[in-house]
Image 1 (cartoon, rainbow, N blue to C red):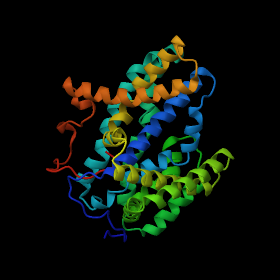
Image 2 (tube, rainbow, N blue to C red):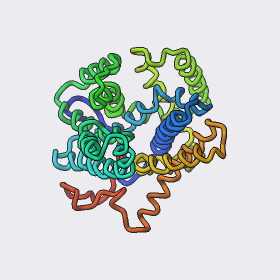
Image 3 (cartoon, rainbow, N blue to C red):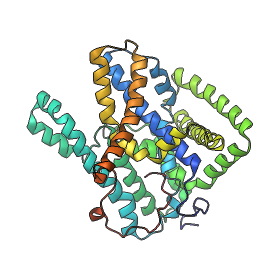
Length: 352
């Protein structure tokens, strides 16, 4: 039990992985890559394909589920001393953000310079530490969520949750990603932390009663689809309900896949979600350019699908290649960038 009345996820050996969590993370990261791939292809081609329907269907819950899972195991570590906590939850993500925003700028700088000059490229790079750059906003925001949650431990958790839910319902739009996405996403992260035991219970119940779980998923899919394609998905309160409902659906789906031991590649993607998140932009962009320039595939939906697969598999291949080439620092934080001693045993951390 923590000081604000919350309780942690059920006790588990520190080295144990939970299959359904990895499946759920895998579903999330594939949906994220699918969104960027599909919207990028459609923007470049000037028209939409069938993949746009899947992107729209997933829009209410794609990021809410990612953030909810990121908070699941926080109660296990939130009472650590600040130095250790900041090392694991802030420095960890700051290292990867700085590294990969620099890598992304290395690839995109020539195009930026051609439009506005090299001086402006330098300004854009500095601005990326205030305004999260491109696809990396998720790992920019996570440390903020971790710090805010620990800093507010003495405040009753229900008050924080209600405030966070109110922020989401307000649909804050200032133009600054940090503020807007904090308002839109913190409630899901905090819910993962606050209601972790209920999330585990939901997954367990789905595995115990798969038939009922499948019926529930079918009902959810119909309701989500109707509300989204009728144009109600972005309405205040409805967006909050759809976010939580979709997150629960992904969790139940992950639990069922883990029970059946199907689609192992989805679990693998979840186990290495940070790798895919950091690196998918490059194979995705290259594949998009090649397919659209050559025109060998006319159907934009198929191009988007291939681009999605290329983004996921390409990122994993980059990770494998980096390990073989001794470039581990691209995906593993070197010891020189640790501010607290490493743990002897790996701990459960859904966000890393």
